[in-house]
Length: 421
Image (tube, rainbow, N blue to C red; front, side):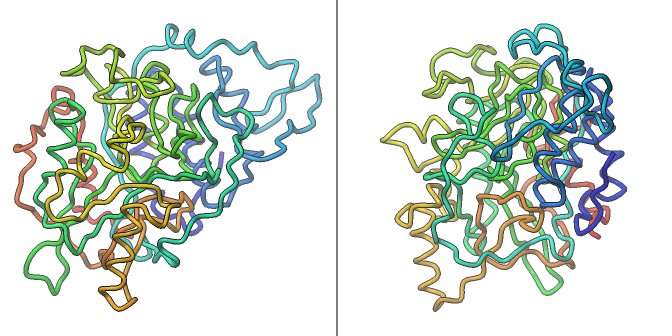
């Protein structure tokens, strides 16, 4: 339906077979998932009009899911003129032909869960995969209006908020100890083999020792995963801009997984090992939405930035991974607040560096507006992935992905086998 080749080579010829392999294991429409994932990336990159994206897939979503709860992206969005007696092209349909929309809760009873697959990351070490970040610490532009179509307590991709949570990760201090990973597993009760943060070890040609790069959910302002979610389960929280999943609404279609260029989504194959699969008490945020911990069977999970902590005045600006970091490498808080922990750390490090502090964001050239800022030099196109001080077996990652759930290993292997452009 559409192509994303110009300047977006992370979605090259190997992306589509990977995406199809994942979606073929679900009960949902593979062709639709591939097309909309590619177009969501085009929207983020400014290559596809937001209005066109919205209406291009409306009829197909209503037909496939019975709902289309994708957030409305553009101001003043209006339905294109159509011939009321005929179906339009490119997935559009005459208004008279649009079926009645059923509730999100009803669609859950009608659709089955998804199956497993492999994580994928865009070309992390390819030339141009990283962008320098000017004006670090400056407040972002703020609009703050919730666009029509966004669910309660949510905001559409691209909206600028008064409060936007993110992280600063200081690669010059990270020693690859994995305390952050273990803390996340414990805090969220993650099932065996599931690692929401993942620390990559890599080596430059001139290096003797490995360098380390923690990969977490980037909580993108223009998140493709939010753009493609048919039920509105994947959303940006209005209070702080965090990208979260409503576990009670997710149907496990895995469209978010193939749309995300960062490889952070993990499908829950079996019953969670903690919380009993329920949604009581501490699993819900202030909106009453189930967003914490290991997701139920058949639901997508990922790094959440500890959203319940961000609602607690005594814990706000903390996260399990941040608390566990003895190297002072991880800092979480409101990127719009100059006095927040991440901005204070940036200011201090910039002063120590005499004003010349190298920073970057992952794959910023894709237009996703990631909200994690890395301090340090990005990996070069000559960087090689190496073994760190751990093995997959240490973390319960085995050959049987269905038994142990999927983890970062397929993504890792793709990169080591020459996944760079």
